[in-house]
Every structure is written in C-alpha cells, then in structure tokens.
Image (cartoon, rainbow, N blue to C red; front, side, top):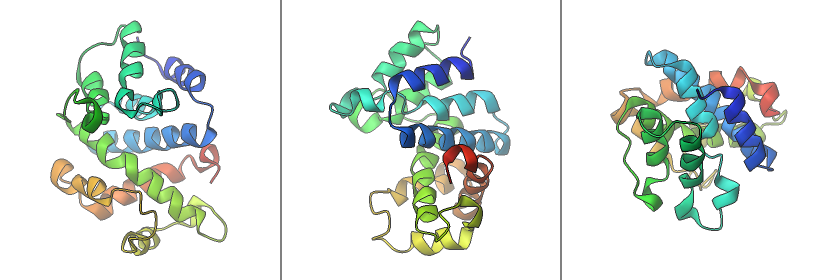
Length: 188
C-alpha cells in the first residue's frame, strides 16, 4: 500500500533542493483541496501532488526521462496501473508520450502544478513575503503582467475552465487557500 510516509521518504531520498520539496508540498495541499471540491479521494490526490516531480533532480539532464523513475519506484511498491499511474504518465506527456490526462485527478494536477509556482512568485514580491497577505486580486493583477513569472504557462492553468469546469478565480482561490493552510511548511 502506498502511504504518505513512503512517498515522503522517496521524495527526500530523491530531492536535495528544499524549494522543490516545498513545491511538492504545495501541490499536495492544492490537490487535496481539489479532491474535496470534486469528491475525489483526498489521500490519493494528495499523494499524486506530493510525488509528481519526485524524480525531477535525477532526470533534469534528460527531461524525456522525467516521471519514468517515479513510475519504476511506484511499480516496486506494487502500484503499476490505475488512475494514479495514468496521471503520473500524463504529467510529462509532451516529452515522454506515455499518456494523456484522462481523469479529473490528472487534469487537476496538470492545471495546478504551474499555479502553485505562480502563487509563490506573487508571495515573494510582497514586502512581507508571506502567503497570508496574498489575495486573489493580487494574483489576478500579476496574472495580466506577462513579464511577471513569464516561465509559468498560464494557458495550462487556464485549462481548469475547460477540463475541470472550474472558473479561473475559484481555481486560484482554492489553490491559494490550500497553500496558505501550510504556509509554515512552505516557508512563506
């Protein structure tokens, strides 16, 4: 059985960059909130958020292998098929061609992954650098400034409207509140 403890151990063995671990924690919190919104399995969605980039540092020199090491690890844990594995396969689909998002859970990960980074960027330009003082309005203001966090693929985030049936404001607000609930763990 896949547990948070096992996944967290794998993450901590695979990643040395604490900011990347914080990213995984942020996506985990957001995915749990989205699971509640869509009546999904909160633990499963959270684990997906926590593990989705676990092999990033190990595969960074060869991006086309990103997610493959995670899939191997999952297989060793007895998890080799189902929606969870399909969502991992779809995560780096542009480079691996392992699969496309085919569930609400997979699309949620696809949309929220970039959004957590954008929200962190908004927090970091605030005088106090705290998530507690970030509001939807401040995120939307920065959203319109294409030079701000230009590496963030806003179109990918905006797919929340089409693929999840969730308005952009509600999607951002849900993610922001989830991240604010673990701000201490995120160092923000």
